[in-house]
Image 1 (cartoon, rainbow, N blue to C red):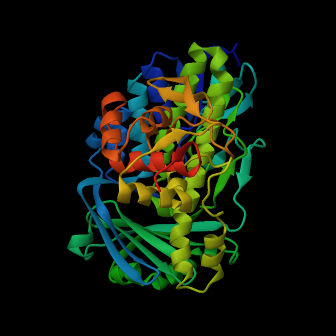
Image 2: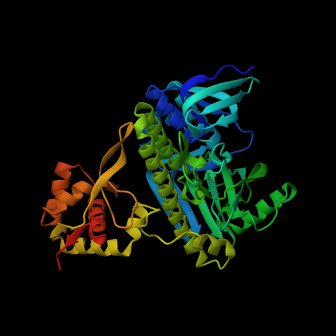
Image 3: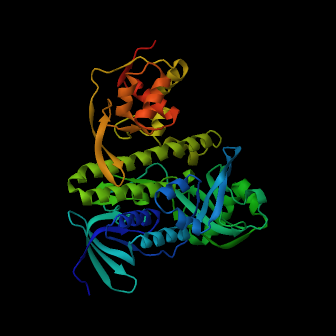
Amino acid sequence: MLRDPRDIDVLVIGGGPAGATAAGLLASWGRSVVLAHRESGLPSLAESLPASTKKLLRFLGQIDAVEAARFHPNFGNRSRWAGKTAVATSADPGYHVPRRDFDRRLREHARAQGATILDGQVQRIDVGESPRIQVARAKGDVVAYSAAFVLDCSGRAGVVARRGLRRAHVGYRTLAVAAEWECRDWPEEERAHTLVDSYADGWAWSVPLSPTRRQCTVMIDRDRTTIRKASLAAVYRAELHKATSIGERLDGARQSGQPWACDASLYSAVRAADGRTLLVGDAASFIEPLSSAGVKKALTSAWRAAVVANTCLEKPHMLHAASDFYDRREQQVYHECLHRSAAFFKEAATVHDNAFWTARASCCPEPGLDAASGLSDHDLRGDASIRHAFERLRDTLALDLTPAPDLRFDMAAVIEGREVIMREAVMFPGLESPVRFAAGVNLPELVRLSTSCRDVASLIDAYHADVGQVDIDDLLLGLSLLIARGVVRDHVP
């Protein structure tokens, strides 16, 4: 029997890293939160979380819950990419995680913060001014909710995202085929390292889950061939054989269980904020697993979504500004990730003359500062005019700057604490929205300080004293942006 809807602040769909994180944060801030999650019977990919993830988990209050799980340490990676071998190590380890166990730890943490975890599946959802959701619970009944906000954290399933908000990444599609292995003879010095290997028409990675157990995955073109379940094992073995650095290490190892496949094709969202509904983490966009940044992206997306929902619950008049801020940032993150992975694909394409690589290398637009992408750190560092200004500043150290005659400031949405608020920002030619921060630097304050300082050293001192500590290269990058885009005029010859 369906009862009258229960009124709550936020309904979260999906209990992966994004859903669990958003639910836990909002509950800890005093919001009434229900997280609807149904455990999938399908296997999940193992993931390598770099050491930098710890800083984020600590900020989100999740570090103790994750540390208690004692996941296998991640001390770096070894690669054979485009014919070149490389080793990247970290003194402070990250984690190698089975996603099912990792996600469960984060849900338990969210429950401890006060979120209600519902073992159920969304049966019906009506989004609008007052979203109404029906959840079919595992025990057979249906519970209805009336929520002020809905966060779609359902990943590739895209419970809300697929209602006209999802946009496929055209150009190529990828299939991941994985299996676990018992590898008792795996080299001792590599037992806490991820391995990555590119070959003529695909790439593979191997993630250790214990000193002797690993998950090995091949990434192949989804459109290359039609793979029936009966032939999946043969395809998997053939692809592993091509990934020689991984395949050779599996000699004598025992495959535990049959391989399984999942779609790993990219997609994004037409918009990640739609009224009182936000698409969060993989529901908003899916990036190349090559980056090992999927979980970090989900966690930061969840934090932003929680802040936006919290803001709008407290200050309804901020709905438009906060939602627009969230959408622009989600689009920007996807754009940045595309460029990072394209750099690896272009490198492989120079060695492997194969459509698998050329399609992936050519599918990302060239870096540039435009109205759609905003001012991503990746674009800043890749822009020729900004690099030129940066090199001049680094070489001469002298400053003689004046504001451009048409310099304008406006208000932009930024996160401070648990809220989105409006702060002064700089208008750039060619960009639709004002920008307050670039490379972590406060641009309005940098404009004011740069026009009163006569050398880089005094500008650094003034910024650190008046605004706060930042990396010197980031400060120079922010100043180079202002010069290159004509926000301030440089009179030093």
